[in-house]
Amino acid sequence: MAEVVHTPRVFSGIQPSGGLTLGNYLGALKRFAEAQDRGGIETVYCIVDMHAITVWQDPDKLTRATRELAAGFIASGVDPVRSILFNQSQVPAHAQLGWIFNCVARLGWMQRMTQFKDKAGKNSENVSLGLFAYPALMAADILVYHATHVPVGEDQKQHVELTRDIAAKFNNDYGVEFFPSPEPVIEGAATRVMSLRDGTKKMSKSDPSDMSRINLTDDADTVAKKIRKAKTDPEPLPETIEGLEGRPEARNLVNIYAALADLTPEQVIAEHGGQQFGSFKPSLADLAVARLAPISTEMSRLMQDPAEIDRILADGAERANAIAAPILKRTCEIVGMVGAR
Image (tube, rainbow, N blue to C red; front, side, top):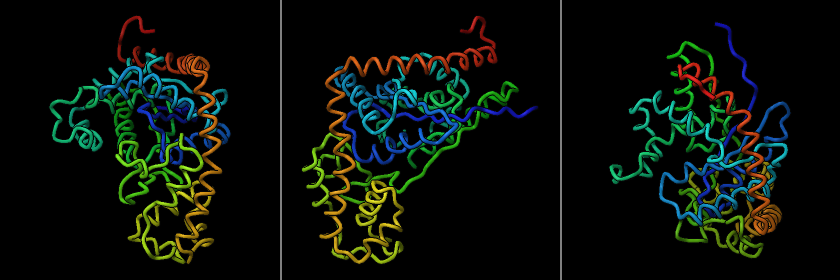
């Protein structure tokens, strides 16, 4: 069977759960914007509001969080003209292909998903079916665009691997070479930004301490204050990168500096090695304010015009549907569904 060559296409999505942080920016939004500058590859970015409702959401808060996330994408450099930016629920092909993939994926595959275990905890019998099955919908999100590359954090790599399994099983079951095997893209100095209060835990908007994170809506003074008060150890920065071993808070701040400055951690250590944190933190604070203040300002401006945000998302959905609809139609034909559209 002749090998099928798929158009290079990036797809990634973020849940509109509210409260964008520095972790969202460095781990996702900044990388999404940079991907636009790589020639010959289309970029498709999705606000995955259908995933968000796998746990109960206040409707008004979900609406605002969706618009705020769209503003965060744009303020971080994602150009809705050069890229496709939309919210998932406006493109029905996601849900339709998700159902087909529910019938391809195996129950055992879903039971092995570590994120489901983490989110469900000891209460797995009472969570929604959507939370259990959402990796199949995530596979549909990716494959309905025949995406070839998926920028993700390390914690989402397992879901991209499941997507590859679903694509392979579908192709094998129906004797076709239709769906690509997308590659997870995990790169950068701070794809996993850690808490400013505990370097062993991921920076999270759900942490009860606001000092544990930098919010993209924080003003310059707040950003600087949080960095100055970030937890560190009493030793100076090491002279070599190996010296960060066993020092999670120091490593986290070095990684944040590297990601904001577009440097490697090794370059940061070469420049700042031997400094006390009393000297390094002000430099990091200045850098963070310079990078983040324009984003916060632009997000605030965009949120003053929700109708414009809605227009941008609707335009993106129309463009996304133009790619997704033919792929869904052909999928249905392969499965044997009559009159597929």
